[in-house]
Structure formats: C-alpha cells, structure tokens
Length: 531
Image 1: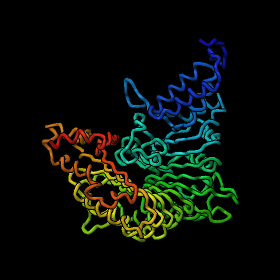
Image 2: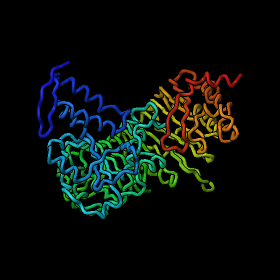
Image 3: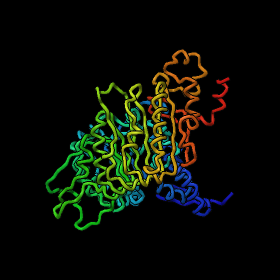
Image 4: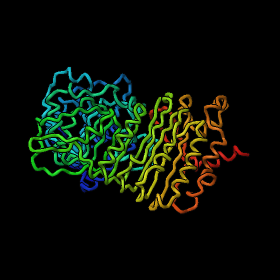
C-alpha cells in the first residue's frame, strides 16, 4: 500500500497517495470519456474522485467543467424518489459562486450549452451575465430549449448505426437533427423567442460568437433569431440549424460585438440543417453591412459536408432550398439527404416531389453520398432513391454511396422494385465512373402497436401473429436476406464493393429507437421457420 500524506486545500483535507500524476491522469480520462455512462453519472464520479486525493482535485476539475449546461433559472426536476439526473445544469447564481471561488475554472470550459425557457423573459436576472465572457477558450456553443433532465443520452439510433460521422457528438441524433418524437422526449416543445431573451444575455451571446476558438455553433428551435449576428462567428467551421426561424436586417448592424475590420473569416466546413421555414437557406446566404462593407451571414463557399433533413410539411420548398444551398457550395464532398416522415397523412393529388437534375447542377466534387429514408407508413409515393440518382449529371467523381432505409410491413414490393432499378442506374459506368463502394442497410420495423417488438420476436408470439397484417411475413424476411443474389445483379457482380445488411429496428414510433442485432447474425434463427 502506498504511503499517504495529508495536505489541505482551503477547508478540504486530502489524503494524498504518492503516485505519479500520469497515473491519475489516465484514471480521470477513462472516467470522463466513458460515453456509455450518462452525463450526470460521469459528473458524479468525477466529483467523488476529486475529493479522494489532492492531485485528482485539479485533474478532475478540468473534466468536470469541460461542458457546462447553463440555465438562467434552473427548474426543479420532476418528482422522483430516486432521480437520475441525466443533464447536470448550473444556474447564473451558482455559476457566479463557482467562478468567484475558483476563477481558473472558466479556462476549462470548451462547450457551453445555453438552455432557455419561454418563461425566462419574465424573471429578474440575479447575478452577472457578463460571467459568460470569461469562457475565452470556448469551442462549441449551443442554444436550445430546456432539456428533459431524465432524457437518456447515447442511445443508438438506427440511422447512425456504426457511423462515426453521423454520431460525431455521441448524441445519436445527427447532432441536433432529431426526429419529432425524439424532440418531444428530449426538449421542451415550446420554441425559444429570441426577442424575449434578456438583452444582457443577447449581448453576451454575440460576444461569445466572436471568440477566436469558437468553431461549432448549434441552434435548436429558436424563432426570430437575427441571422446577421452569425457573421460575428469568424472562426466557425460547423453550424447546426434545427427548426429555427431567422430574421434579416439589411441596414447596417449595431452589435455588442462588432466584427473587426479586415478580420479573415474561416470557411465553414460542415453544415447540418433541418429547415424551420421556407426561407432558411436564402436568409443564411445573404450579406449584412457592418459599417465597412458587406459580410456574408454564413459563408457556404468552402463547405465540405452537408446534412439536409426534409420536413414533409413543405418538401417541395425544401427541394428548392437544397438546390440553392448546393449552388453556392461548390466544394461539397459529402452529402447526406435525410428523408424523415412522421405521422404521415395523405398526399395532395398529383403531388410528385422529386430531386431533379437542376438540384445538383453545380455539384461537381461530390465523393460521398448518403441517403437515409424513413419511409411514410402506407404512403410511399415516389422513387426517392432513383430520383436522386438518375436525373443528376454531377456524380462523375462519386466514390461511395450509402443507403439506409427503414421499412414497415407492406412496403416490401415497391422498395425491392426501386432497389432493383437503382442497381440498373448505378451500373452505368459513364454516369458513375469513380464509384467503388455501395452500402445498403435495411432496417425492419413494425407499426406503433408493436413498437417494443423486434422482428424476430414477432414470429414466436401467437398473440402477435393474430395481427399479421401489421407484421412481416416470413417470405418478406427471406426476400430481404437474399436480395443481393435475387435482385441486385450488378452490385453482386463484384464490379463495386457491396456491403449489404438487414437489421431489426425496435420501435417505429418509439423516441428511443434501439438498433438490435443484425439479422445476418440471426439467420439460423430464421432458417428453422423454413422447415
């Protein structure tokens, strides 16, 4: 047992083991980087660790304050005899006490999540909002509605299975691009009204935008957000915009943090958007006057990656928005199109939304295309995959195609037919001369009545089999498992590298959609049904 020595720090007395600091660094890093644990659990572990010995007191602080969830007026959690707070948040008064006691904590903060409530505008600020200015090393800034303290982070979603790029932040929801059901579970449903935010916080937010190390900005469900202040984020490389409503001021801007004259702007590299209005892209692509000249609100010219999620409510308008975005993003290398349809309803007569040639008319450097489809239940209306590919002339350097489709019972025939047509389209060497790999992942799901039932379980339950129309037939399952050999002749020929999988997604309308084991691993369990 190592010898101990006693050391005091303020009112705390530590028993300090004599071990190299590197050992403690490794232990602390392991705990802090455990993404399988909820944020609150990690924070609680780090707090306990910080009190065990003197070296860990300071090592743990760096991790404890790397991410700060800030609320003006923290709300008490729901009544729960054993609360498991997933979102540790700090209010303005508590933040003030922490920074006054230990000012160096501000230097540890890399991510600031500002969570606001519609009622925040009615409260009187108690504390100095200017404390946020101390976070000079901030790298990521987020503004969202209040997050449910019981929301479970890190649950895998079917669409990002095995994909680090789609789950870059460990959020399992395309960054902030969450589906409607997940949004209702994770966040308060009411949007943030920028105009109702206290002026001191508006000014502080603008100053944070201009910090030299700020590279990522995420905005979720904010209405009346003044787009012109985005021009202050001169070092921004990643922008997430989810269901926001922007305003635009064409007259010269008077800001709490004026853009320095002659400041060289870093090019935006990654852009994720779930449009909130029909004019999001147009407004973000505008310019604003900062006294000495016009400055782009957002500079799309050097974008390398775009994730675009369609909303069914105005999909035609979004096709135009996508085309406008790609027209000014000539260097995009990776494009993700997410067709997400919840709570479907009948489509208007003659409605045929299509991705057409002009959508991609200037896209000449695309290397990776990802298409994600959550198909409308009983309302599959057009060939999304084929329309995306057959009318476009700009895929001459496309190297990889990644397709992920979530299906429901009764949609087997039209989707099989479309994948067969897709196999034909991409067999054209003149159209896709650089294509080397194709990934197709099929996720089988049930309707809402069976949201907790896996496909495999549905074959073993007489109660479930009583409603066979809402479940998969065995012939459908076998068809999907054998599809490459029966319907994808070109892709199976070996000309390109094909990765094909069939997976079982549990929970068609369950906000926490869990990806179950790949059916390929469970083939033997299905085969006995053929005997």
